[in-house]
Picture 1 (cartoon, one colour):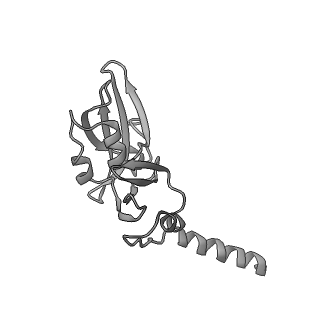
Picture 2 (cartoon, rainbow, N blue to C red):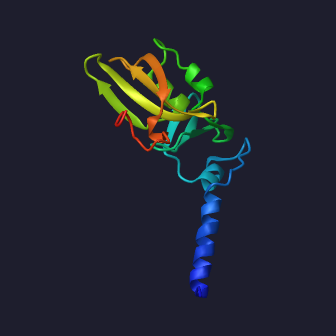
Picture 3 (cartoon, helix red, strand yellow):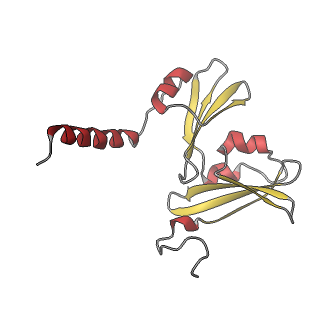
Amino acid sequence: MIRPQKAIFCALLFLSGCAVFQPVTLTPGETEAEVVSKLGRPTARMPDGNGFVLEYNRNPWGQATDMARFDSAGRLISYEQVLTVEKFATLKPGIATKTDVLRTIGHPSETTYLSRQQLEVWTYPYKEYDTWNSLMHVHFDNNGIVNKMENGQDLRFDRDGKFGFFGY
C-alpha cells in the first residue's frame, strides 16, 4: 500500500515534469520581465542593433537554441528556434564574424581548436529538417571570421549503443 504522502509527492513530481515540456506562448510586445517570468533566466543576453537578444540554449545535449529578440524599448519582437538549416545558411564564410554567429545561432555546445589548420571550431548539435541528429561545425580563422561550415551526423544519438567511432 502506498502512503498518501508518497502518492501526493509522486503525483506532484509527475505533474511538474509535464509542466517543463509544455510549449510557452509569447506575444510580440511583451516586456523582458514577462518573457523571463515565462521562460526562466536566459543562458545569455547580447546587444543586437538597437535592441538585444535573450538566448535560451539547451546544449550540450539539447538540439535547440531559442532566441527572444527585443527592440530598444525592451519589447519582444520575435521568438524562434535558431538551430536550423535556414539560419545556418545566413552565416556566410569570409563575411560572418564570431559576433554574427553568436547573435544568429547562439553559443556552441563545444569549442575546439585545430592547431594544424589554425582554425577554431564551434559545434552545434541540431535536428536537421526536424529529422536527422546532426552537428554543424563552424570554423573560424585567426581573425574570428567564418572560414567554412560543415555538417555531419551526430553519433551520440546512434541507436547501436556505440559512441563515436568505437566498435566500427
